Length: 299
Length: 108
Image (cartoon, rainbow over all chains, first blue to last red):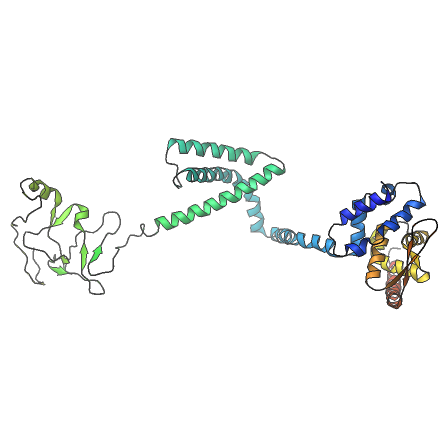
């Protein structure tokens, strides 16, 4: 390597040093001087150009060195914190336990990636819906475990890191979706719609279509008018449960409980005899309730 | 003990001392340092130190034409450089005395 070639290699190695020009100003003359003194090649006397450049920058100082330090700082900080925490018993046992979780994570990762794949190719879901879905899950879990068990080099490591990151994102997205979809429905409370007619939709699985009030002494009450906090009548939706309000005594008041209900099935049976196809009031043997509310308990 | 580590801390002072004696060009400074006993001194380290001291305003420089080879850039101490040398030499003398006394009382 001629002095010129050596100087060029040093320049290349110095790269974008902020004082590049000043640093390398008389490098060529300096190297020519050294070369002139002996026939021994410069690489043998000064070492490789890259090492020469490193030494040069270290002696001169400047950004090249400090940038290296800055880049290493977050990692050094993390390693330092890890080392400090390792002196704590609980953290130490936690770290020791982590490798045991690895196989479980590989399986979960495979499942999550399979669900992501299935959701991308069709409808979004968090549970396999068909045999084909299960097959995809099985293949993905097998591949994930295979990748996990492989002690591969850098490409495998990068791939595993990317897959881990995607899996964590899928897991978080799935949890958020599950939370938002199961939220209001799972709450066992009576849903009240604002408006003039308040609808009691249900509590739990069965739901409310009639209300049977009782007095303190256990006597059943009739003709009890129910209103909400705003004075709106509380009504139910018996039709959704296979019942309808008995209209044999005229149009009933829908928030007067208990409601006189008849099963829809029996009404439909009568339908065949009707010309217009609509249920008609059937005389009730129990008699019609009074038009006004009465606190008198009846059987 | 690795003397190259010790050298890093005092290379500025060593270069200032050589130039305080008389002006010199890059390779001349390296050679004189080696002749003085600092055989491990690296060429790149000396060259980098000269460029840094020059940028810091401690050195003057001038080019001398040479019939045999390339032009030589000579470096010499200016006022700032002489002040820097005096201060650094004092610090070193005090430090060296402390170390010497420490070593005298050390292993017997």
